[in-house]
Amino acid sequence: MAYPGSSTARFGDSGSGTLRLLVYLALGVAMMVSDHRGGVLARVRQGATVAIEPVWWLASLPARLIEFTEAANKGPPGVDLLFDMPTFVLIPGNFKNGKHTGIWQFFDPRGRLVEKYDYDKNNFTYIAPIYARSYLSYLLDDTLKKGDRVTRPLKIGGVYYGFIPYVSLFQVPFDTFDVNTAAFEANIELLISPLGQLANYTVRLSSQYYEYDQTFNIDVHLFDEADRTFLPATLNGRPVMSRIIIKCVVNPDGKLDFD
Image 1 (tube, rainbow, N blue to C red):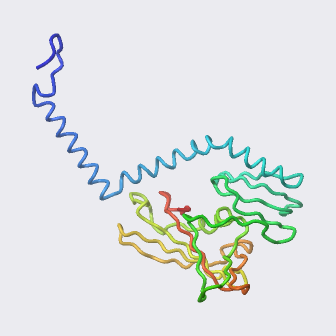
Image 2 (cartoon, rainbow, N blue to C red):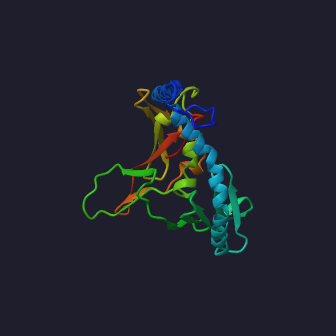
């Protein structure tokens, strides 16, 4: 029964409460079915992640500016901070006559130093260790035995900035409208010759949900000479053939991004 003086019906006073409950249950079932068939909630979550990324970046900017400024101040006079807007990467380094000079420092999106490269001496002065949950993996086209000394192939720019050209080049070959791109995964494979040249570039795009699995071979000459040049992997001091695997996700626009 209703409270004295109240015109609002209690939940058990009539069938209206039961009707509302049935409506909510029907809506819940409809959402689960639509999510199962079309990945609606996955797209909502993906969109929310994209929308909140600028907020996260702005919140972390003061601390990152301090960190990068301190890093730059340790370098030679005249160090510039290059600001890469699409990837939110700050790169301390020098330019002279339009060319890189001196030691450049490369960071990942979290502000961790991943590489230093001396453009005057053409060598790497610092290489960060591989993180356990990295989106990069490395394979050697050779047999290893106990006691072998191995170095991985290296790219100027580090494990993030240096690999952006290979991730940004590919676009899925279909219209992503009404497609749950979160159900896809992509693996880029870079074949690096013993001479340190990009010999092959392939992208495997797959989805169990859509029963899709295709591998695309792409002309390496779409990249400029700098992007085709690596420091090759070595086995006991001898340059060897190697492969770099970049694990990627597919964005709603059909472009790839680091996983």
